Length: 526
Image (tube, rainbow, N blue to C red; front, side):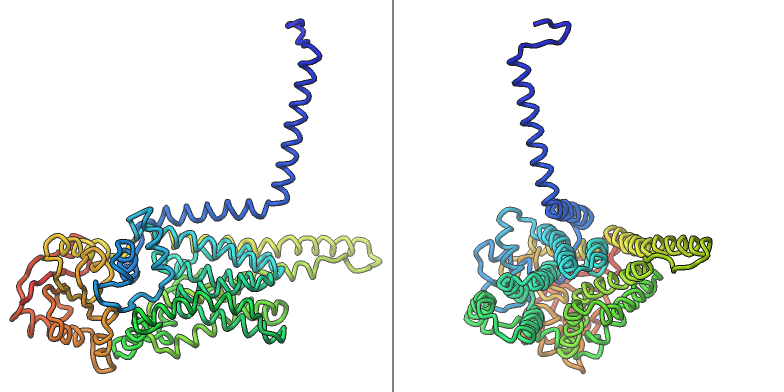
């Protein structure tokens, strides 16, 4: 062997060539696998990336209502049962599946609020992928890309992080996608899980079931069995454990909707829309969506069933007469995003229609000029669609980024009140408060709320002629809570007629210290 000339023994050269050949073959196999599974790889990267970004921005995001579910999950995790207050079997969470999921995963992380945000971030990414898969099946690539960009960045959807809503929507969208691929048993399972996440998930099951029977003229019995199993199991348990399969919060929010000071779902829709209408970008989204609806009725009728879902949902919630909560409007967003995608598709369809050879003209110069115009139009029109998509992404992304920097002003002060109650009150104490979520979760005490979410007899006090203050006065007269949490000047009659005679200030929380627009006191009552 001569080192200077880089000549090696024949055996070494053969081994080197064999190793290179094996490495090349492995690279070829890997390349083929990546080419064959590029959609799977893209989905994995998208899922991880979107989940990470959303959770990074909103890991501490929250609002009051989901904390009721968190307390149920924490009690299950600790072995206290499926209850909010110990010994009171009342179903005040509208999401049994989300509750159980938090209880199970809570064994790995005791920070349930942050865990809920992680599940929500993952669910928004999964929902986008499910809609994208549906668009791919229905040969609507522009709708697919629109979904991937605009669904997980829509501010109304992102604002529901921490609640069951992102998970609920991911399951509903998965049901539509699996149905399009004719995987009916999986469709039934997703629809059942959606129903167990939120009761209105039954609308998806009814819509897909009716469509299947209408077009195939038969009942998919195996899918019916798959759907019925988990649903009947939960309803049977709930009936025996709570006395009713329906959550008590449904009646409570119907009673809240009756109050003169409240706004019902139907009348609240323009209020929600007006908040977005104040920004020009969302007006343009709405106009493109209207164009998309016309396009769906004309050229993309396979989407009509999907677009019917938010319509039926809105009609059902309007008929229920529930009060207006912002998260109730989130299921309208998927249909809106799909309509935007179809509106942008109009530009692509127009470009395809004009992508044809120039007319058969004798004048060569005219023919060349028309050909150049056609090529320019074919290039510009899809570019306009891309511009709209990126512009909408910028508008939504900017709002989401701003939103992440402005958390709910109640979180810090309510958490401090709850922690003070936990540290300074006897374990058997009863606490009366208007908003029970955050305070109740951190206090760990028996809570009676003035909004009727935890006790059905309190909800019954809410009528067209009463207010939350009337319910609070009834609560203190019938439940005699040991402590009352009250914001200054919010319930003057309660303060004048009860607090001044039966209670003493126990702790004062200055709102300015917590960037909250009011001072809150905790009163000890006898």
